[in-house]
Length: 122
Image (cartoon, rainbow, N blue to C red; front, side, top):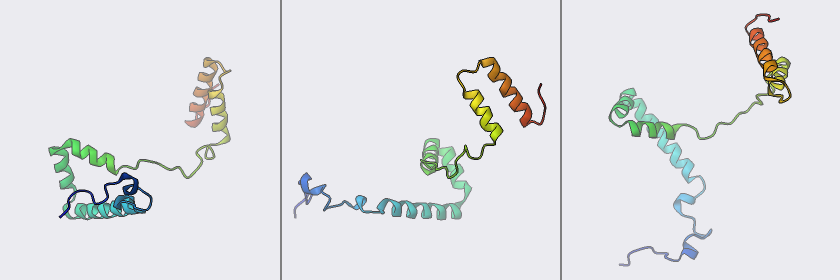
């Protein structure tokens, strides 16, 4: 019985005609979805006690799991600038303007903070 790689030639082994199992479209998404479903089922069965046990016994694994489950990208669906009022836009324009002196910027920032708190600054 022959042992080893049945396709030892790198020219054909890594070609587009021979996709590896991990390279199949959607393989990673299917695996991730299945794992997260199983993980959620396990959490429902054993609850927070497992999390606290892992945290206490192996804090490195606990942080690795937490970091793995966090999203790697955050998509912003709204334009944050569009949500600003005209006064806020004017304030940002003033504060970011390089030709305005630091003293004037401080005065503008104090007035803006006071207006946001409902006070009047003269």
